[in-house]
Amino acid sequence: MNVCPLCNGLRRVTVYCSYCRQPMEDQGKVTDYFDDYSPYMDADVMKLADGYPHTYRNHECVHLFYCPHCREEVRFIKE
Image (cartoon, rainbow, N blue to C red):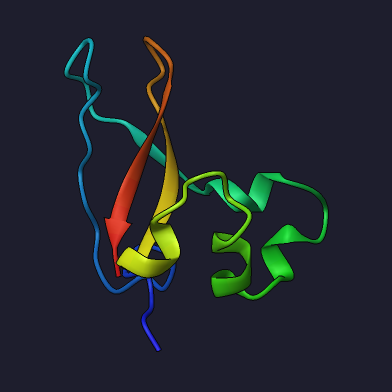
């Protein structure tokens, strides 16, 4: 079983905004925002409904990053 290093606190990464180049804040998995129960669902099952067709096969976790100056961006984190 693959695990996301960010979700499990195994690694920290600094992601920079593609517009202003300021550090962004990790807001967690995109699928956690689907509904109230999404954070408690199986991560692999949620990958089948996350809107990105290859995340399950490529073992990627889609994270939402927030730039306080610009906007939000999604990034694919390799598991």
